[in-house]
Image (cartoon, rainbow, N blue to C red):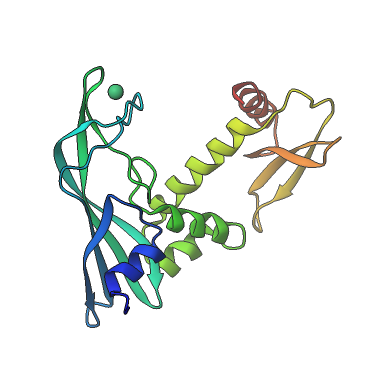
Amino acid sequence: MPISQEALFKIALNLEDPWYITTIDFSAEGKQLDIHVDFKTGSKFPCAKCGKTSCSVHDTIERTWRHLNFFQFKTYIHCRVPRTTCEDCGVKQSKVPWARKGSGFTLLMDSMIVLMSQHMTVTAIAEMIDEHDTRIWRVLEYYVAEARCNEDFSEVRSVGVDETSRAKGHKYVSVFIDLDKSRVIHVCEGKDASTIESFKNGFRAA
Ligand SMILES: [Zn+2]
């Protein structure tokens, strides 16, 4: 049985019922691929706040996410996101499986940005994917904060600090290291006493 283009993209995007692809618009001129996703009529969704299952759809909001390029074509996912009615929480926007809450990028796009950031500057990433660098920073800030929440600093016994110049001239960065585990635990600008204060605050917050 031949598989439709929509079904193929559904697999590629890892979409599960009730989500499905309605149309795929490809513009060679605009160098863009637009994937339109919808959910089956009558579907129920869990409440995004308390997790209560089988909430009815109250209304929907049109949203767009930037996805990984397909070859050189910018790719966008468009979908009407349901807002559910929950007896306890009221009307809440549902979570979609391909993006985190409030993000204009899909999770795969997020992963690509995080991966690239380990090897390239944010300016270079912004240029490469043709997005404003503030959008890239927002993604990185989210994942760095999340990673820091999962870090356990309770076993840190001895800390070393190293100053390094970030560029020719006077831009210094101080790097704080957990000497027992050889891992970086804090980085901040400067090389004076204020960096110790920054380290203390960051360390306490984490
Ligand atoms: Zn609820």
